[in-house]
Amino acid sequence: MKIAGFDIGGANTDLAVVEFDDQGNIINIRTDFKYFPMWLKKDELGSALLSLLGNDLEEVEAVGICMTAELVDAYKTKKEGVLDISKKSKDSFNVPVGFIGLNGVLGFDEVTKNPNEIAAANWIATAKIASKIDENCIMIDIGSTTTDIIPIKEGSECAKGRSDLDRLKTGELVYSGTLRTNVAAIVDKVPLDGEFVRVSSELFAITADVHMVLGNIKEEDYICSTPDGAGKSKEDCMRRISRVICGDLDMLSQFDMEKIAMYIYEKQVQKVAEALLEVSKREHLSKVVTTGLGMDVIGAKAAELSGLKWVGMDNFLKKDECVVAPAVGTALMIEELMWKD
Image 1: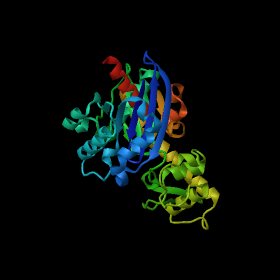
Image 2: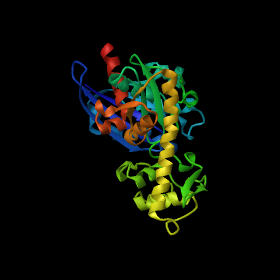
Image 3: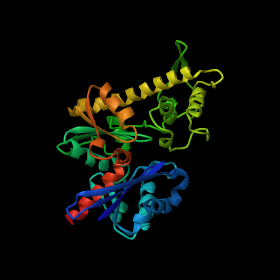
Image 4: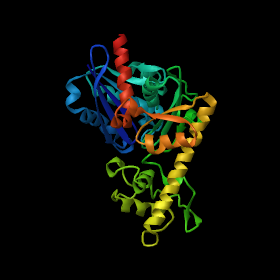
């Protein structure tokens, strides 16, 4: 049996096709993803889902959907976004389609009655995997745009916040990611020649530029658009970062740029660690399970800075599967529901 799980984000849509044997054991996982800016292309969502699924379309027996794309500014409200995304998803397939909600899997009719139940609930699916690694831990999932910090006790997530707004209050959501975060949202000053220089608040550079300069990611990991529409080489990234302090590469050396990038990186880790430690102290949990694109370069570093023990989800999944963990978790939740039925 094959189950497809989709994680429909604002900028990226991820896929995991999980194949199970007759006992519900995982035989194989195929993953894929697509940079798909929903604020520009929401009307093309159905074709994007089918394109990602490809040849597996004829073999999947059910599809699971989790989402965060309802927040993009193409929708006036999250309710409008959820209803549009869920309908386009349901209409794309001729097999049962389930949606990941705060309290489990919902059918389309249930979604129409309570759309906020599935808004930004993809962390529920990821926590399902983390609980298989450690029944008492904090899952930290660092994607391209955000970081989820989810406490798990006795095998079940116990997040205090149930919406993105609430989780921003509780430390369970940090709007900082590996690729798309505006550098000016992380620092207001950077070091240069023994002094600190204030930064401009323009969207000149993003965290993908910082991590490329430092070698934390490869060019093929830089899957989002660049702020200036230019290339993704180290030099391109340094040039964008130089503009953050209204400079250029004629005025600033590679050493300057690497030092500035390292400072921004350290500040990003500190901000994530602050939230992680808040959740750890409140929930009395000291073990961390890291996943996502930034699982090593941000998640593990934040755990170490917080004095917490950590283990990567790649102890359970392959590294590339960790990058799309919500999609994998979605497929697992759909399979469990079918198994019960």
